[in-house]
Length: 335
Image 1 (spheres, one colour):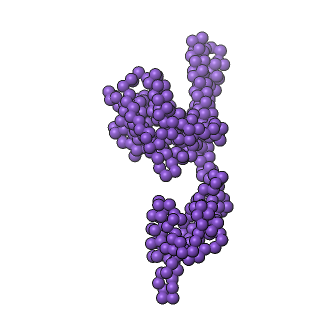
Image 2 (cartoon, rainbow, N blue to C red; image 1 turned 90 degrees about the vertical axis):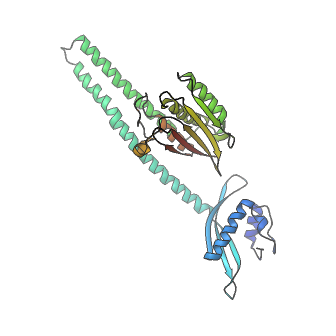
């Protein structure tokens, strides 16, 4: 495991990435971190079996940008066809990788936009058509001369209700479009304890249920660098839902935990509420105006906004739940 030879580019690479100069007959061990060395040993064992191993890595530059390399390990055999060494090459593929990543992002954005258009089309055709039709029909009826005053008043009241329904839908659509826009707010460090305390005060001030228990643990990760208003909305909607859909005569217990992963922060929102039948509802869980429990007031915007804002922050969300056994929303956000 000693260096036999290297070229000038390899020397420059080692100085830039490891701040170490390559030397003939030096062991390669110091050129890798302890965590990386475990991976290298596994890779070399694989090279012995397969003769060649390829993978891609990304490495940070001093200015914060990232370089991508295609890494290749090859086995070297002697005249007796026995393994006698390895060749390691790094090929700079940053330009190609950036193009590929941009292409993937464009494709993902197009798929997302197509899905949004289908969603908006559904809203317009179902949630706007009915009140507009009511207004048109009632307006035509108002033109009749033989209507009693009470009948006219009833029609005006119904027209007013239809107009309010239209206004609600337009407000919802505008809110969604605002979230879809590029973020103008600056990222900042947001502490989970402070966020939770603010929401607890807000939620408990607006609910008669003062027996809500919170169990919070943010030891592994106490903060994240993100958009404060979006994170507040995510916390608020998930906590509000846990209280709203708690079991009758059972005090709500909301457990919020954070966990630091390699390059992400994971947040878990778990409750002891009514739970969700995911076998029936998983496909529509985060849909706009989708509701599965009509015993409490709501219009099906909360989870839709949560997912929209999580994705706007570059994160993901998944749910674990069973009827009668509570719900656990797990969110991952980039560090």
